[in-house]
Image (cartoon, rainbow, N blue to C red; front, side, top):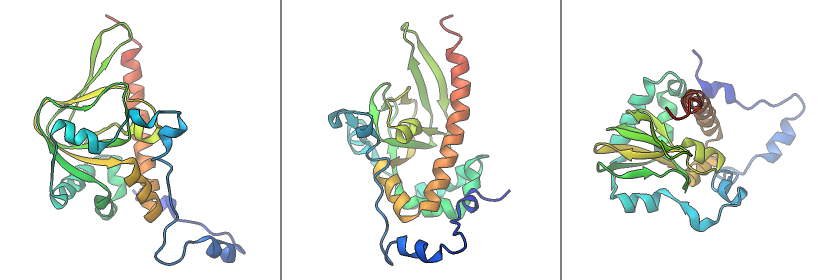
Length: 220
């Protein structure tokens, strides 16, 4: 199957080449992007309520994982994923510099329900519980994430509050992509960023359909 990045090649209509060239940044420069970093402000969220990865990492005792090691694991896991494999190993390699890689101890709150966080997490090793407290008070275990799973991407993409809580069940290794890093990717490698966002949206839509089915059952 053709890689997804091939679907995002820019097209210039006949006669527009001059105009297109005038709109391009100068060599070595990139058009700025603040689309994801400002998403929460667009929702009217007080900046003091935002929980960035840097703050959460300190709170839960995260330790830096060598980027080369984390990047190799990310490539291996996404190569086995039916959707993320469409990026291809070369694209995932280019993406590595935009991620932070870390190790986490067990029994830590990686993501808390209803908070505002501007990062997503790819689980590289270990196990993470995904739970949601229902309006009637029941705590529902939605899933136990396994290596390769993506957590928190919905808030990163739409600037909304966290839908569920994610807690480490074991020692874990993670790759973290924050809003500012995604904006940097949009500016410096827009084709790569577009491919990533498209695949995240597709995976998220499929997962939400499954979760909605479970939540619609109501209390047992």
